[in-house]
Length: 374
Image 1 (cartoon, helix red, strand yellow):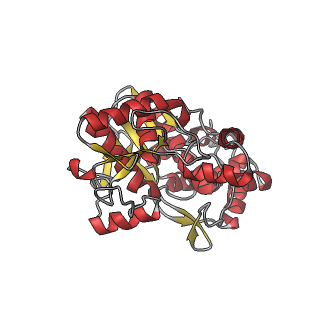
Image 2: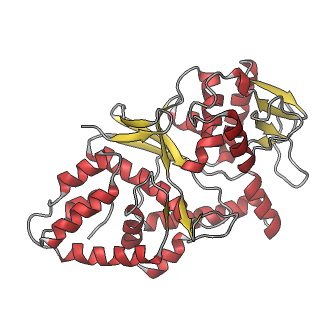
Image 3: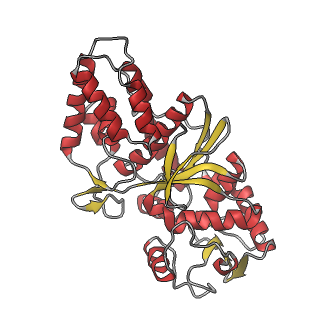
């Protein structure tokens, strides 16, 4: 049986339908601060999916972008008095080292938004030429009324979409927009911000257009699996879909995968709120394999809250697994495979291995599939 995943747009669990090579795109970091557990949980989910797909004989190409130019990183660089690209380079190095420590497979590509300015300009030009965008106030906006499928990823009414757009920097009160749900493709830069020349005047790209340009450049017109945290469904992934499909005329994504939100003290972890547990914190307290298991002990689609007990439980679990020495190391492997095929049920997979270890059996093959070396 193929791997079956919940698809956000279709609102159900469906098999991944792909060829020998499965293409994946995971929305990556904006490198202005350290990665927290919410980030790590998303990227670990894509890592587990890749491992099972490879176990089934597929090749995988996973692209994880770096948003190295947007409002957040420019604001932080301004506060610190450093060049935004220097800030990005420092944070990317830290992030890559932490993901490597957690045992994540290397990405097929980890492109930066600033590497795709020419592709972004071409894509915006094509969007204008196809009648799906307009110029106003020195900016270029996507005309959501021109795309009849707008809203079919999130499945919310207009009022709810407006509320989410306002929460996520959509600037719904922009007087130059024809409709508050329209979104920026190109915008004038402030005096101290980076700027590139374009046919519409000097400026910089909007947030959503960066991922479309990178996905199309690295993986082609249709991506097999695309996703990120659930807070990206709208507006980011909805807008990506609209601008991509309006130009290519083809489905942008076959399967939308979205991760639940990770909280602390009853509130979603957020850099803006500062209620964060950083990956670096966990790596100081326990070995990386334990940190990895602590994250895997929550189903990717559920919202969950971090507790220090999660890490202590993972340390104890590793010790029990390592005590199992009986058999050939294959114990639980088929059951773990079946759990992962069932919407990446990592929680069920861990329970299988607990039972095997309690019986004294070695589980090295199954833990290797989960990216954990005993």
